[in-house]
Each structure stands twice: as structure tokens, then as C-alpha cells.
Image (cartoon, rainbow, N blue to C red):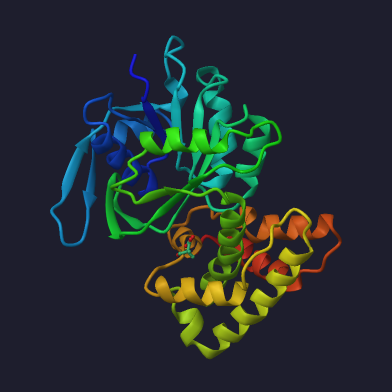
Length: 318
Ligand code: KPL
């Protein structure tokens, strides 16, 4: 059996992008298998993924796919699983996949937030849960057809886990298995800090793009939104400084300004979900931050208001 067989869970923009890159990376080995939500999703799968990169031709990748809900009992254990579904869908999907996961199955998480990453790191065997944080920009033109709009970078790391001290070696092995060159993946030995910072940035940008119904850059150019963003960054910094589990982070307002500028034409993933009538990851962003704040009796009025505003928009599905 090939040692580097990959399964990719989730066929959104990131799932398709990484599945295609894995296939190119593993030309001489086994094709990655796309894991789809159910048999209805499988029936809609055209048998290939299409990737469109500005300035280069459209490429198609024939990848096998299976429905998570109809995997054969005798399927061998999954060796490597890249999870590209939303944060809130991860644990239910892993429960369904449990019969095909064993102690040595390696999991790579691509979600926004930090809660799922922390929980799985604690729950699964040491050194088997990896986190990927990426600045690649991609969106779905049609189902299974992705536009790779922004060529970015990706960072791979593990969160600290008491029983595992061989992080560097585990990372080096995993890095080789991923399409490190094509997707600009590099190892990060301080993944906790990177994920907390990304979490802080997402808690600032994502809900406000919903409230102002705008691209990321407009949060800086619209005076009212900019003032709101700055106040929110102050609250988030105070919270992050007070949370004992959060590592020291650089200035949140400066970091948020840089990301909003660099992604000025992007619609945040939360606003895209709202516009597409999908459930957002807000419970894993401001929802989780408010939960941590309440555990430590810290006030977070701005985060609470924004959480409620996104929940309202989500429940109205307009
Ligand atoms: O990660 C993002 C998201 O939209 O979820 C940002 C960094 C805000 C870019 O759009």
C-alpha cells in the first residue's frame, strides 16, 4: 500500500485547491480521494476538479470521490486526512469517519479559529494533528470549479501537546508529503501564536464586513467602519492579553490593518457565507472569543454585539 495516500474532506474552494495540488505532488503515487458530505453530493460530482489561475490555463484533475456516509466497512484506515470543511462541520465529520481512523492516522486542519485545532490536538494521538494556516485566496465559480485568485503562502505546524516533544521531525515528514513547493508551504514552530493571531484578525474583520456589507478594504476606507474596527481591535487586544491561554501577540490593530489592506478586494469568508445563505463560522470566531471571555469574567460588549448581529443576519438568511 502507498504510504502517502491522502483523503481530502470538503469540496469548497480550499478543499478542491489542495486536493488538486496533492494530486500533482503525488504524480507517481496514489491519487488523493475527495470525501464528500453524502451520496447526493457524490451524485453531483462531475468526476473532476477544475482549477482556474489568473494568467495560466484552466486545468482539470480527475480525482476519485467517495461519500462520507457510504464508505465501505472494509476500507483500509485513512493514512492522511486534510480537513477543509467548516469548523462547525469538522467534529461531526470526524465522528462519521471514526471507524476508518486509527492511532496513526494523520490529520491536517485548515479551518478558521483555534477551538477545533486545540480540541483535536488534545483528543488525538500526540504528533498526529497538524494545523495549516494559509493566505492563498480562492473562490468557487461553480461546484468543483475553483478560481485560485491569490497565490499566497501556507504555514504548517502543531499546537503544543504535553506528550509530544518530537515536533520538528513530525513536521518535516508531513511537509514532504504536502505540495510544499506549489502551495508555498513552510514549517512553523510557533503555530500557536500564528493561529491565535489569525483568530484575532478574523474576529475583527469578518463580522464587520457583514455589518457594513463590504469588501475587507472598505473597513479602512469607510470612516465609520474604520473607527468601529479600531475600537474592536482595542477590545480584542485587551481580551487576548488577559486570556491566560493566549500567547503574546503583536499589535492587533497594526496586523488587522495590514491584512485588510492586503486583502482589500476580498469578501471575507463570513460575508460570502451570508450572501450564499450558508451557516458562517462565527460561533468559532467571535462566539468562541466571547465564550473564553465569559469563562474568565472579562467584558466583551463589542464582540457580543457583533456576534448577535451576524447571528441575526444568518437566521434571517436574506
Ligand atoms: O481569513 C479571512 C477570511 O475571510 O476568513 C480574511 C483574512 C479576513 C481574508 O478575507
